[in-house]
Image 1 (cartoon, rainbow, N blue to C red):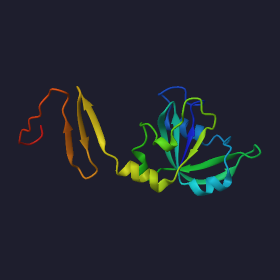
Image 2: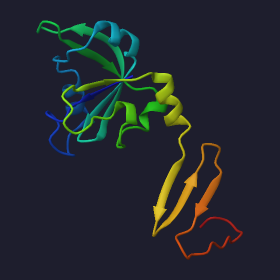
Image 3: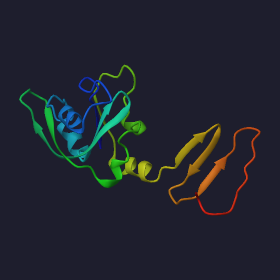
Image 4: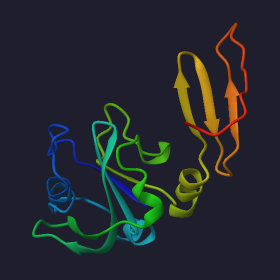
Length: 154
């Protein structure tokens, strides 16, 4: 799995899917062909700390520039679609001041953290967590109580 920083080409949140794909395939990525071969399955396009595009990498081909490559992209796997609009997984995130616009990580390890990740919601200091198995846990805000009311959801 790879992430590429498309921030130089994606200036605002109004970018279309085709803008994001064009930025990701623009052909100036300097990558090791060995590393790319090991990690070339899913691509995250990241702009300003947010995943703005998720794709399947069909191929990595040489660009017109020496030692640089471009991606041939297709629709992402279903499990990866949920990453769009969120922060990238930690191992694929770009740290402030980082010069390398590409990150690589082991896809099965990333997938396990995405698919098996708890979802959390914070409301007025109360933390609600939904586990991958559907269990709900509630941590009330300091000094607050929890009352469970039986019945159907509204």
